[in-house]
Amino acid sequence: MPEELALTIEDLDVRFGPVRALSGVSLRVEEGTICAVLGANGAGKTTLLRTVSGLNRPQYGQIRLNGTDLTSVPPESLIRLGVAHVPEGAGIIGELTVVENLRLGALWRGDRSAAATSLERTYELFPVLRERSAQPASNLSGGERQMLAIGRALMAEPRVLLLDEPSLGLAPLVTRQIMQLIRQLRNDRGLTVLIVEQNANSALSIADHGVVLAGGRVVLRDTAEQLLGDEQTRHAYLGF
Ligand code: ATP
Image 1 (tube, rainbow, N blue to C red):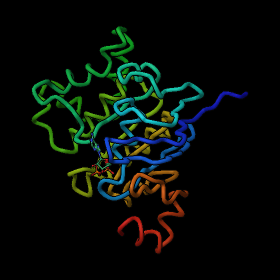
Image 2: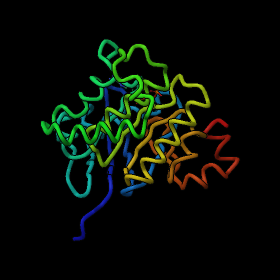
Image 3: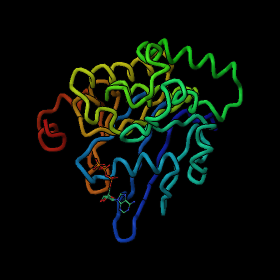
């Protein structure tokens, strides 16, 4: 069988007691593409991302990356397989400096020179993080925090980036800037990106494909272009 270069999610069921957060969710994200996961509050978007990164365990279904089964890999091992998760709210540590937060992303690698190269690459992508490297992360603006969270994930040199609501709480101009950076990562580094967003318009502006979740099920999937172009779909599912 040829090597499968994709993130494949098959028939995923996730329950929290009586709550069926995901039911029969299947999704395939080709290598080097961006897939937007859209849907209203409580649709199951965060649960999907957390399940891919091993933070939630499915009752049923499978997740594979390039043919490797990720379903029972512990979350801390996933990064070694090339999957980095940027959680909602970004999860950075305000008391640490910017560079300390970044270095946390490469701690597990145990290779100082590789980490130094990744740090340089991260600073090239986000010059503002270099300027503010010695400042506590708590001093950063919302957009800079999001850049720091993405930068920290990139310190692991991942192949797959899982992004949970990167636009949360950001002004439209800053959101656009973050989205363009994500698109740049796909174009320049061939990263595979699964991005969860309530801001469907922003996410679809950089995505290749999109899926819409409702009540834990996939109710719509198409190219980003089709989803953006179809007025009925936009009104019915995407709220713009
Ligand atoms: P939001 O945009 O508000 O984060 P979402 O689409 O990401 O929404 P999820 O957070 O994945 O939705 O939640 C899906 C469903 O699962 C909701 O009904 C939620 O209440 C429930 N849920 C999520 N996590 C848990 C948990 N740890 N325990 C119990 N129920 C949960």
